[in-house]
Image 1 (spheres, helix red, strand yellow):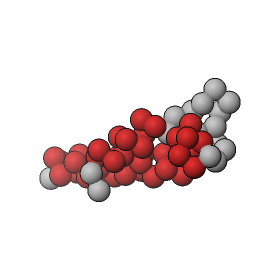
Image 2 (cartoon, helix red, strand yellow):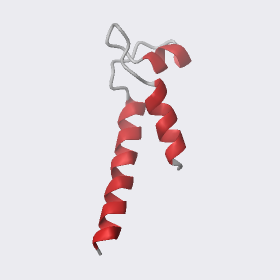
Image 3 (cartoon, helix red, strand yellow):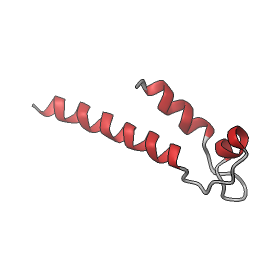
Image 4 (cartoon, helix red, strand yellow):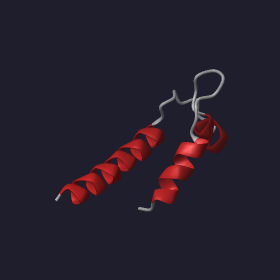
Length: 59
């Protein structure tokens, strides 16, 4: 996976004025609470990438 995909997901899936995910509503007409599962996936991927870069620098 590329970082671009994660950035795109995080840019679109943001909290709306009603506390729901705007990306889920726009793409699938779903009222998903924010944090939706896609935001959770993207942030976990970012955390893994950052941790891997840090650990490679430590060694």
